[in-house]
Length: 115
Length: 114
Image 1 (cartoon, each protein chain N blue to C red):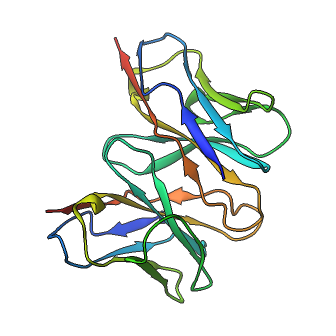
Image 2: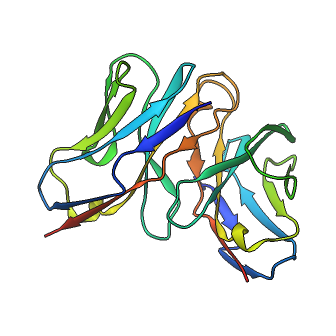
C-alpha cells in the first residue's frame, strides 16, 4: 500500500520570496509522482510529474520538484512566488503498474502569498 | 478542445436519497476515474472505468457504483446517502496507453447531504 504525507498544512510566504512544499511517500513498488494545484472552487491542475530519469523536474508556472529516492521525498519549490500562486497544492503518487494509475493524494498544503 | 466537464455543479440531497453525477471526458480520452474530496482533505480514489468496465476500485462501500457509456462518458451513483457523503466529487479522464498515468480533472460536483 502507498501513503503520501504532506508535512505542512499551511505555508505563509511573502511575495517574491522562495518557497518549498514538502512531500514524503511510502510504497513497496515503483511509483510515479505528481504535484497538482487547486485554485478556489476549481478542479485540479497538473503542475509537474516524475516518471523516471532526471530527478529534477520542471513544471508550469516556474515550479520544480526534486525526487529523492533514498529519502522517499518529492518536494516542490519555486524561487520567487507571486500573489497568484495562492492555492492548495497536492502531492500524489500512483503505482507504476501499467494499468489504471489510480492517484493516492496527500492532504494538501495551503500556500498563502501576501504582499 | 473540450476539457473534462461535470454536471451538475452543485447538488443538495437529503439523507437516504440517491444521487447521480455525470462526467464527460476530455476529447480523445477513454478512461474515467472518480474521486471524492471532503472539505480540507485530499481527493480519495473511488473507482476507474475503462471499456465500460470497472477496472480499479478504492476503499468505498457498494453504495457507490458507476457506469461508463460507449461514448466514454460516465456516471457516479450513490445510494442511501449519508451526511458523510457531502464532498466535492471530481472526475478525471485519461487515455489508455503510453500516457495513461496523466489524468485531467474536471471542476467537480459539490454534493451537500442534509
